[in-house]
Image (cartoon, rainbow over all chains, first blue to last red; front, top):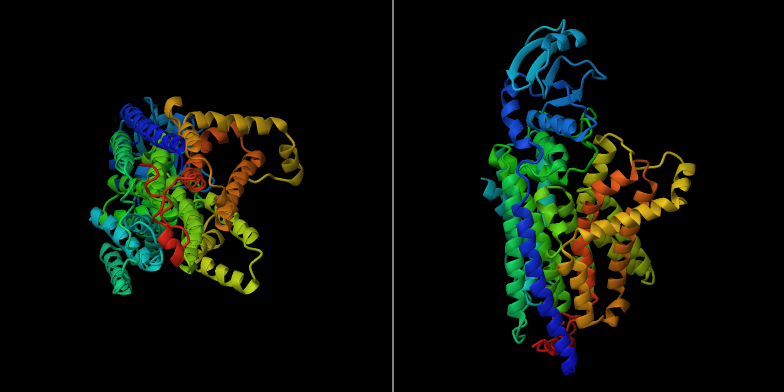
Length: 142
Length: 475
């Protein structure tokens, strides 16, 4: 192997090594600037924690919200509730199949009487911070 | 107990690969590295299946899990009794300058790990799909009585039809931890990402020598987009490890006289890839097609023998995937066109090709800063070292490259045919698809490069003597 080829190889290897370390430094900087709890998933745990003591673990639970499930904020709110309330399964309410329990997850103060009346629900408990549990009117309490 | 869950994976994986891949020859650190990294990925998949069996038997408690895995470890330990590492090489000692590359790789990996923890500290639940899909299903699996909710058709917008390798492994960790702590999915994500980096380094070192191995690792961690997929806690990095493991084992067949173990080692991650993500099925089909095409000249008896070993390896993951899809998972066909006419219309729509190509280029730009872009690093290496034309003629290399190309073609076909909004689909999935193939791309690139320290060529007696030559070329 000639001197020129050897020099070319060494130069390539050293350049790549140097640039890769610089790239890793750059990655670390990007990582250090990442937004904490970007979708508020961690923060939602405190909101939903007390709900778990009321809802039966195997229940299929209706989900009602003032946020549209079709936008990112509404989707994130739904999945945060689903994640923290597993193994219960949340289904958008009104649901295709009848559900006994309905979780309310609201981002703004809401007229609960109006929600109950419109959907034929009975408020079981308001946990505050926009989280509440309803039951379908006519079903017996637990 | 969380630590125990991961120690078991490392030890079980190494014991499995140490005996199974005893025929590997090359620098000792590379042999052990290959065994540990590939073994850890395979063990994660197989231990997840064991956990699944315990769930089905209603025995997925911590004592039962520890007993079952303890028994498995004892069997693997007994299987390894008397097994010696064949390699007598301690590395490419004569190569001055290797330390510089090793130091650079160490620094780059350390910074990557530090970045991983920075992101995980801020977002311990991972990114969107982690809590909306993967870890959600792990929670359902780990819930005990209601574990079958993990594939309930009632689950809303969370793909209950997705395979279960990653959720099972995370649920197994939570059973050890006795709580759904964030440390388990974080450690799982780190395990797979580090194993993928270690596997690239060791596999390329076995194929091309220490210098090439270290450079492969350096190029791999220069891809910021790939690194960002780790703390996201998605299944794409685990799949990338399986794709890499299957191709690396297939490539290494050219370096051993007895390739049955490597055929099993190629089949195992290929099968587990199916059990990880649906894209793993595309990879499996690509690999089988590529092997069939490149090995068609072998006699049927020889070919049947090879397929038997490959199939033996692929069986656990493939059977799990098939059983799940046929018996448990709800049927979802969101990515399939509704009719032949619709498919033909999309295939002949020139704009779709343009949109896909543009998205690929835009995603490429996100892999890193222009001055340290992984493609730039690859160009520098290609210019500095040149191509090894002999590699292109090698059957195993052609098979691996063809499998890789077929996989990319399958991805492109899905984008062309999808009935969903193409821009949205590209925006939300392309970085993940790129992550799935990135380690394998680095492997194939480095395997084709003429790096002058080819530590492990075919292990014939004459070539073993010749192997030492050329090690000092970079000095």
